[in-house]
Length: 424
Image 1 (cartoon, helix red, strand yellow):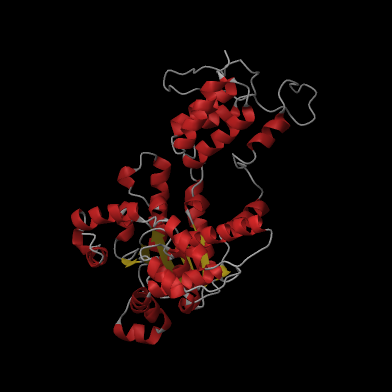
Image 2 (tube, one colour; image 1 turned 90 degrees about the vertical axis):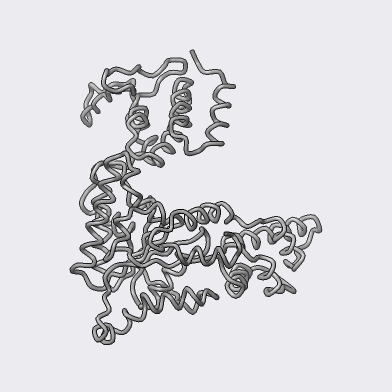
């Protein structure tokens, strides 16, 4: 029996409200398959695999032949697993006259091309894919391009940049280059921008990767991706290797239920040990919004043993962010200092949203007038009143960490900032 359209609509609304609920998406995909809506079902299953690579239930549903509307998919079969077991019929040999006319293999490949990557690729294709995924580039900017953030720059210079730029003095004072630097702080405050500026200061190549660039649904492939990433960095030395959202890639193994993810964290630890043991010219930077979720092994001496708190932009930095996002827009009579005072506590991303909102107001007014006009202070001030700071939830969590989980003084700088802001 086909699912009622109202049931499907309710499930879609529930998925929109809880996009990371994998079982709910799987249920919706199953109902869509029963209703014959295979295209939408494949999109839902693709979303499941983005959140849970290797989900056997989703992969099984993807491999099912298309079912006519009203006919349910095959039922579960094994006593060992409650999930559906699906047997995929073997593809007929190319040119075979005995091919089953009832199953369109070309259509199946088209449906799955953007969801499930090819399992086997030629050697040349693999090499080009890796080069594209982990391409080293010139940073194109330096710390002089980072507005404000004087304290961050000073700490970067003392802990990271000065020893690297002065090898003779480093040897004289016995300063080690072991380990990497972990940038942490609220989202949207310029951690990636700072990492790129550090690469420019060193005159080094820059490689930035995230969780999605490395983790793969196939067993063993994530470890291979991590190894290849570090090999690319070594071949391009001097190179700054930047791991964005490292809490997703190097999350606490005690919280990992899936062995493939634990293996990926172990592989990352092995590569970090190789970096500090025998490789020169590869400088490690990482960024996270949640350092308390990073596996403690990643923060031991010789790995990411130095941390730097990157806070919301100060007044000078806020002026620079406004200037950057308004530089190519038609503006008149803008008082950057006043805007900086009005946006205390805003992240760089919040300020970018303010500029976008002000541009929208001017655009809509121009449409009503029938002629274009400039973006002025009233537009920006109205946008500031509309766009509220987005960092409240992060600081709520950070406050609890600073008060109750500051083991060994790891978050003393965070606690000092919260006291200055009278948040604790």
